[in-house]
Length: 174
Image (cartoon, rainbow, N blue to C red):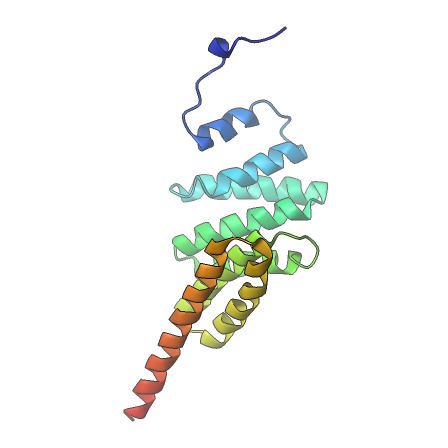
C-alpha cells in the first residue's frame, strides 16, 4: 500500500530525520548502530545525550564487528569531548580511531581524528606529539580529496610553527 507524501510527517532537521529513522529499525542492528553514530555530533549541545548515543553505537559496532562505524563513533565522540575540554577522553577516543584507520579506509574520519588530536595535544602542551599527528594528517587529507582537510592541516601546521617560534623567542630571553 503506497503512502501519500501528504501523509508523511514533516521532518525539519537532520537530527529529527535520524531520530525518526531510529524508530523504524531494530535496535541492535548495524543500521541502528550507524544511525546512533550519526547522532553523537548533532547531540553535542547535550553532553549526556551525545555520550548515550556514543555508547549505544559503540556497543552495537563491537557486537557486529563493524570497524568503520566504530571508528566514526569514536571520532564523533572524541570531537565532542574536545569541545567540552575533556582532553584525556578525547585523546583516548581519537587514538583508538587512529588505530582502526589501518583496517578501514575512512580518510575523512582519520583526518578529523588527527585534527582533534592536534588541538588536544596542543592544549596539553605536547607540541612534539601534536606535530606528529599534523604531519600524518596531511597524508589522510590528501586521500579525502576535500579542500577543507588540506586547509585544516595547513592551519594546524601554522599554529604549531607559531607556538614553537613563541617558545624559542621566550627561551632567548633567559
